[in-house]
Length: 372
Image (cartoon, rainbow, N blue to C red; front, side):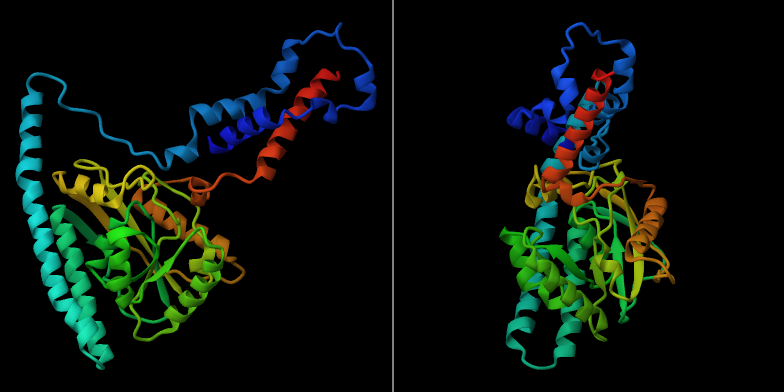
């Protein structure tokens, strides 16, 4: 859809002259006597079909759309029950969950800040305490959603030369995984209170931040990733190679950076059950605070997490092929559909060269038929 919109905008603005694609002979010969036959339209139908398909069934846009369940309060018998549920969720569950979260933060900072700022030396002891505190706080978050999480497979172990990769639906993916093991995560830098938590809390467990709009960040992050995976006492590294949140029905292209580190790649598949709430975070339409409020006013957050067998680069296999093989494993295990899109297109417009090439192909297909 984005590519189609860009092409249309370019045509409207530039008004390319179709005579540029005509031969000199065809320009000199008048064509008023010629008729456009049905076969002429049929011959350009693949291009028209592609355009219509982009409008009707845009597989890229569908990856980033929330799919709310069908309403069930449609008659006089169910509507009163739905109203009662709203009162319980907003009047009882939400205040109690906010209280649990507030108490959790108070206890967390009461223990974390003295360890982080006051105690000098004993770095290994400090790291262990911070790991446990971060795990505890993530458990408080999951409790505030009445999280029902079922973990499958062995718990992640603290070993060097390994990296964990998972499909990405929301920032809560990290919280759900972090309550089981203190991962060091690579994540987009966020503003506000989330940025404060990143700088003061998550950096203490070795997390790495980047800004997708800064080209220089890629080299710095790649170097930090290699250094982190070589450390013996570092926390396991967690990467979301899609690079953006997808709606838990699809998986988009995995970035190859996580698969070029020369270490074991441990796939993690996450699948949310939408029976009570859709956990997808559409960051372009909703702040993370409002996303948390939506989760805390639902009945529960239900999901399954599978820790799959570690994978290694095979002889003769490229990093891109390695990434696709791991994506296949995660997609099959979580029941997700694979699509061949780069998730960063969600943030950036397609290259002008791509849209110009599409325009040229379409113009040539039309003019070839008119010349006959």
